[in-house]
Structure formats: C-alpha cells, structure tokens
Image (tube, rainbow, N blue to C red; front, side, top):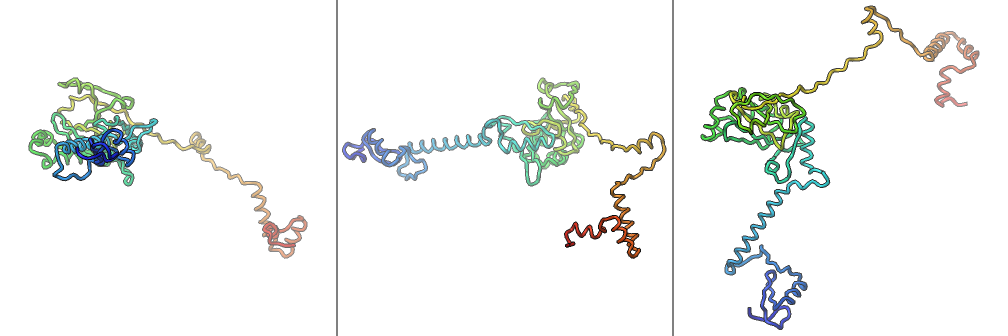
Length: 344
C-alpha cells in the first residue's frame, strides 16, 4: 500500500480501515482515528459497492450478512411470547386460559419454542366474543391430516366434517385413502377426542377390550364426541393441549380404542319456596284460614281524628269549639306552621 499514514502523516501506510477507508501505519494510529471520528472499524454491509470493485471477499461478506439476518429473524419468531417473568404469563396466552376456563375448558399450553406451541393459531375475538380454535382432523388408518386454522367454536362438527369429506376438495391420492370414509354417511362416523392426564379427576375410565392394537393405543383413552353439536359444547369439561385433535374413525374400528365414559354434569336443583304458616296448616288440617290484617295503632288514631274533623266540619262553629277544648290547633293550621307558611 503506497502513501503516507492519514493519521500521523509520517510513516508509510500499511492498513486500511474497513469502516471509513482511512489508511494507517500501526495500532496507535488505528486507535487514534477511531477516537477522533468515532469510527467502529467495521464494514457497512449495506453500503453501495461498484461492480468493478466486487470480488470474492465482498461475496463472502454479503453471505455472512444474510446468514446473520436469518438467525436474528428466527430468534425473533421463537421469542414471540416472551419468557414468563415472576410467574406472569403474556397477555394473549393469559386471555386464552381465562376464556377457555369461562367455557368450562381447561387450556394447557406448552413451553415456548415447542413445535405445538408455535403451530397453535387459536385466538379470542373480543369484538365477537368468540373463540377461534385451531383444529386438526386425523383420519384413522390413513396419512390424511386436515387442519382448520381458525374454526368458529359455534360451528357444528358434522357440518365441518361434511365439508372436509367433499370429493372435490381432495386429490386422487387422498380420495383413494379416504374411500371408506366417503362411502359412509357423515352422521355414522365416530369422532374421538384424546383424554389428557389433567382430566382424570373429571371422568371415570371404562376400558373396553382392545383388539389388534399396539401399545401406543392401549395407553390412550378417548372421549366420543357428538357429531351434531358445536365445538364449544364438546370441549366443555375437557382438557385441551394447545389445540384440539379430533380423530375420525369408521364405525367398524371403534372397538380398537379405549373409551372414556364421562360423569353426569352437575345439575343445580331448584330451591322450593318457603311456605307460610297458614299454608302449612291448610296442608296438615285441610281447613282454610282467614288471615287478619294488623294495623298500626298510631295510624288508626290519626285516621279516626281526621274522620271526626271532617264530620264536625259540616256543623257550623262546632269544629272550632272542639279544637279549643282540646287546646290544640286544627290540622290545616298545624301543617301551615310546620311548613313555615304561617307568620305570627
């Protein structure tokens, strides 16, 4: 490299700064120019480079820059939900748990970064006050797995299944695997939902004989869902791990699974109204009674005084003599005094 050092101007230049391109002779001049102009000493990967100046080093530098950008994007995607600080959950996840509990469903989430946690697209729409679940439909004894990203909780399960079993919505290969399901009426198919371990306290397990099944199926138990009801009704009193997986089974294969019989849901008994003493006496003796109304003594005395005043008011001069003998004022005057309208 020809020329003098741009920093000291005395020694011959040996190095060129990747950041600003300044030529220097040694380490003292390199540190001096960084402190003087605030240079980082790193090349700007977004700076314009002429095509004539492009070489292998530039290509490798750009390649490393793209690799770093992809790494940062992947880290940001994995940390969509930040780590729980002090046991507090993120707002979106906390709302899912609350809304599911309000619907008598236990929502269980997995740790951040797990594939099932990342794939879950379930959310709650505040404007419509509705849960939109991610639902995966698994067709037994096939490789077909259909996914509903945002399924309305009020939609009938049979309607959704009928749409998925439409021959026009599948390729020839998929139709060949689903040929037995397409031949069956939709209302004859069985829908099974896996029972999670957290749901043991809310049900009684009844294991039926399992024929021709592996160890994996023998360890799992399933609820049988009602195909004519909505998703919200069928998820009540059940545990959902991130999102529901509904297994579609032919009627002939239902004996291959261990079924779960749910306990009857609690029913609130109506409280009988409290009966009065008279009603109880009527039931015991069969005789009717007339209840006497008890009046207040002060109210009765006031009514009697008013009746007397109205009666004497019809006789000229008798009312004034009566009030003077009682040494009290007539009611009209007493009211005027109390209201402050009568002056001395």
